[in-house]
Length: 369
Image (tube, rainbow, N blue to C red; front, side):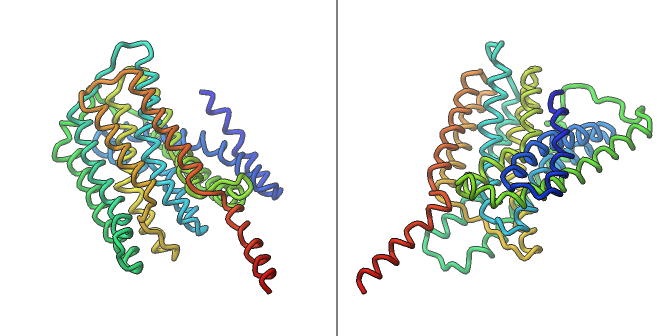
């Protein structure tokens, strides 16, 4: 695939880092390097899951599916970019629910009258995502209810524990107690027939890819803050659009590929399932990581982020309840994502402009004297 050609940017990033080039150039090149690494990590995880069987394989996919996002988010958090990381969680949910699912419906339905999927599974995923969204909305509601400021971080920590517990229960439900409801229609390949050398090869590729991804992500996050300033972007837009996109490259490729092959159940699981994981697992893990790193992160999102999240869940629930999809529904979801992206770009003024009022105040004061 053409994405393999982007692997050339991995050594280029390393060389440019050693040369200490401009942060904006380093940021752009490292972003390009992350794309094929995230794709390769997803493919290796998928291949290794086939060897482990449906139960352990599904657990592995669920655990490592958001690995790029966790690596990027964790490193950005260690650099003190808590607001950017928080926005990236919302960005991941919005991107999976609107852009990825929309593109899947658009590409898959381009040459078909309609596509169908399991409405019961989609309905449960939507319900679980609704419950997860409540956990992300409550801290903002409590904050705007004039609660004492000191109560915010403990509340976020407690809610994170509840969300992560829900995630573990959802794994128990889908992979053990009720796994027959979520079994794939395709026959399972005989994992035991694969030679041991092939399994070790896949495991080695997975390990090397994860190490490279961690290093390139660290380079990218080092250059992130200077790049935001030079591009005159606000932290919310950088987190939601930039980091949210980089952490979900693998899901985008997989979802479109599944939809094009008329496997909408897999496309739904990749998109809506990834959004659910972001809310139930990624967000709590990042809160826990911030506590351990001494870089506290809460779940208190802005009103605009809360509204965007709520509307996205409602829109996707409306489009998936009948178990059918068309290319027009996909186009509408993509349109909603673009509208939100424009809103996030303009909602906060760029950081440099925030400092411009200061000279005016001082000059006014001098005039009074």
